[in-house]
Image (spheres, rainbow, N blue to C red):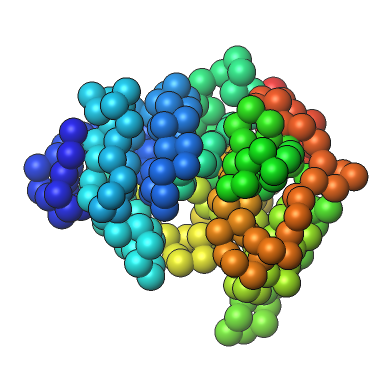
Length: 289
């Protein structure tokens, strides 16, 4: 199911947004596009939208399950604009997730509890956004997987993560219950990553509400939406397992020749379970036991 533009989809198919939760997948290339779409369909999203630049098509297996929208995902702030346009058109309180190809959303207890159960619990806790950690995945052997991507032989960093308090840029005041997270490949290869792109926190899942917008740095325009906890206790968080940084480091000529391997002594083989990410402290169940 193809739509020529996002505007075309919003004119003719916006009613589909009521099937939420909605997943928006932005394809930057063709790498693992099929596995990304399959993962989020299996997770229980009611509607999956694939934003595809010219030259990239839906894998045949998904033409009846996914709505494809022709879209220049590489343009400046294009992803932010598309997420906000969909959120504005969706019924109020619709849960929206956004991510890229070769990225996979995990929530606590995903092996035994559904996405809808998690969102129902989070809603009962009066939370309208899910704080997510972007966990860098990478191929164990770059000789065998020169793009840095290997689903069958993926690894992640088991150590090296840290959080810094977040400060209001205008007033200099510390922002309550907000942190900037760092770690993974963006920490170990920081000389190849612009400072503004080194954070690994992302509000990847939030509810559409009037006046709530996604900002270019993956925060929301409403400060409470950027918090990892409510005022009275910690809340659950989620994780986005992502090959995106590995792909970028292997695609960029300077970093490609400088990086011979992503593996280091604290690399851990990824077993593709939410439990492993919880055990590593990369997402938390909060009060959801």
